[in-house]
Image (cartoon, rainbow, N blue to C red):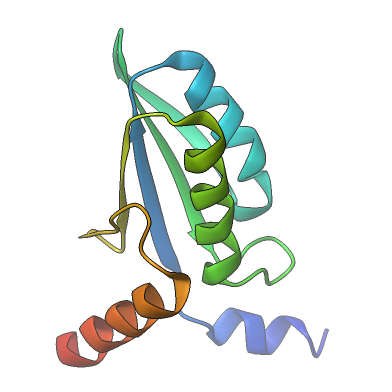
Length: 109
């Protein structure tokens, strides 16, 4: 019970990844299951995978972004990604991305 309290106080970060292929969407959604993933089909060739961090067991945002980057590298799939509504470009290092996201959160407060 004590572990549940700190997790409940952590800010939730939303992640959205747009893909054009159903199978790519299903594959990435499956990889992101620990991050509460679900799919939305907007039309025949437009899928969005939604996820959030922390994950079910407290998995941090950098872990989710690493899953996405590994998937992008393996699939070479065209996708766009947003973290808390802000673009998350491909091939950006995790550390640089996290610094940018943290800075944007600080400025937004």
